[in-house]
Length: 589
Ligand code: OXD
Ligand code: MN
Image (cartoon, rainbow, N blue to C red; front, side, top):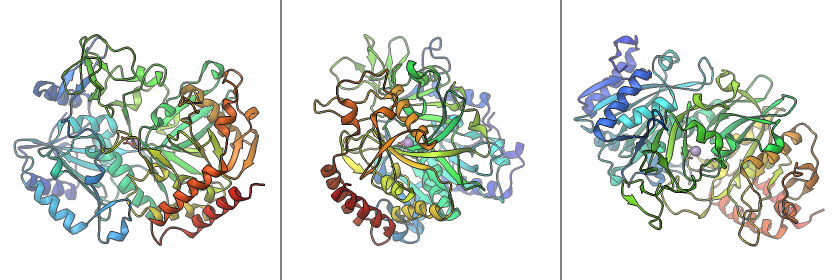
């Protein structure tokens, strides 16, 4: 229930900060959120009354709602995202920089009176399992009911968060919808002050401050300083027929099939295998006393892309989103059900994501970056270890992305350092998750380019530093399910069949799968992959596993140019790894 702070026994500094922000933003009232169902329903009621939400067909989609964004506010805005520090050099060439004094002054000016006529919601949130030494607390202050409701799905809100505050420390987040003016849109991070200020956007990645802002941009800086990793990675447990579960994390740039992989349904021919999800987007990984990475999911919900999600690509999530879900910018069918491209046949009559009558041929009905927010707790294949305060032990790390050519279906690095190079060289086609052109190949090291809160070359150093800290580091792999044949068709059927690839990774980690040594790493022999039931035509598997040395040389040339742009800090070890790789390609044994 929404109420005042008196029910909490809250520390003075928190009360003082909330009062100070309220003095600047001047809301009509302040509401402290407790994360209860009753409170969630009262937020929903307010939003259905003022048109922020449209109630979906409650028989088919109980407790599900549709939100339509302002058309200028449908994706992350990287050009409006800043890391604010003392020195420009802190953030490197892949981030926008503002001095922290200038940033704070600028934003405070914009915040002045921005909540007049609105309620300011105080949202204490916990990231990570209850009782975990790795969990963190933040407080988001927002004047958006939509943001408050989504935060209640994506994090653990209320008393539980306040109870986890240690030494009075918490992340401070201030968010205001403002007038959704794109010219005054700022998503500013102040790692030194543990402060985030976000204005004039209500889009998830810009406004749910727990997600990219706290869990990745600021957490990555904390991770560097404290010796752990905050990563844009899924976490899954792969259970083999004898009941052994192998946990892996995977970094995939936005819209590269990460959620689908996290929720993989084994194909019929591997039905004695199981895949359990721990996370579909973010992993925090700490070394334990035996030098093994233990990973937790800081989030409590999924905020995933709708288009192309269907009964074949992700049957498990299709079932999950049929209740207690907020859909954003999907299309609406006459019967009050949500619809998006790639869901299946389109209904006869639809309203598009902006509420206009849609007919075939009119472009997409749902926005390409339309999303759903739904709680992890209602996902039927959530790992039992999801709530383990110590996290899950990680055996392998996977890098992946969309590459129509070059990168084989799967291969393994020769060493940790080589694996870090693999991640640093990650290049993918841009998607609709961020504003800007779609389909352009760009570097996205470790899928963290938009989310690393400090100099990316130092980030590589940080990764490399684990070599001397542990003998038990995960093996590193790269996968690519998007390779195309000469006819422009995907060579690999993907989705559930990706378990064949995951099985090979598990088997390699357990020393029971064959590979051939190529210049780029260990590539599976066709026989070591469980292809028997797949009926791949002709020499498809050879094409999928092919390493084209000349094309790789071109790739290295381009990586070399990219790394040069990262400046002096770029680690020598990675230059050496790049040279070794070049040498192997030049003189294959
Ligand atoms: C996301 C993204 O929303 O990566 O998860 O953009
Ligand atoms: Mn993401």
